[in-house]
Amino acid sequence: MVLTEAGARLVDFRAPAAHDELLLRVTPLWTRRTVRVRIAARPVDQPALDRLAVRVSEAGDVEGVMIAAHGLDEPCVPHGVVRLIEPEELIARLQRSALIAWPGRKPELAFERSAVARQLTRGATTLDPVAIRWLPVLALDELPAEIADLGEAPQDVLERTAFRLLTSVFRFGGERFRESQRGTGAPDAVLHWPAGSAVRDAAIVECIAAAGGYAMDADDELRFAAYVEALRDGVAEAGCEIAFLIVISSDFPGPRGGRHPFRRRAESLAQRVGVTLVYVRAVDLARLAVAVEASELPLAAREALPWSQILSAGMLRFEDLERLLQT
Image (tube, rainbow, N blue to C red; front, side, top):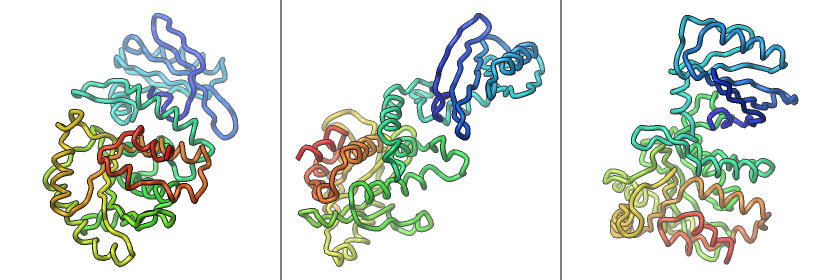
């Protein structure tokens, strides 16, 4: 899963005694080429690297990769187009992968994330000017492979991407407060309902990149309440009323139903500042955006979506958001 995360496609697999061998298809600058990856079943020695280099040359592969999961049997020097991945680098790549979950600090394949990632990639490839498919990865506090070398923080890209999606795909208005304003008492963004909406509600939006999901604490609740108090008059001058506080993250762990900690925080915020707390998973928002774009929903219909009705439920999943398109 980690090897194919950046878009490479598995085209062949073999498992002789000394290693597993995967042949991956990549597309560097208009030409389809293959990368030969060997995952060693025992400590790697120099002859193993030499044999891989010979095979890569014979097959015309663009690169060979030896993954020494069990370490090295002796000092080794890769040559030609062979790259050696030792245990420390392998572990680091597993830790950075959005397709690997770590419950109890042990790695597990995140099959649901992988399935959704493939679905978003298929659905968004030709209709994704706002990077819809990046949203679930960013919410896990990871950078997508396409921008991993840019050096930006996933949190910053998540805030920009979520606001662009909400305003471009769903036609919300409003204002995003930039990263430079973090710590000044401003949220990530304020949304005004689209011009074609039957109501003039508004929402404060807070995006939180978190690999293990987000759980609101007392300090967060006070901070969110302060956002509402600080921005309420200005939003009213624009003809809207802050009715919702929307938190977008990777997940919101907790028991299902009334025992989820969301319930207590939602009741407390409603009493403090009179707004409805809403939890939305980034992956569900991305799936809804793909559905809207793929159906080519007219702009007038997008502006008329009954957001206030759906958001009033508070803690949402894709099935709840999907009802927007069924009304």
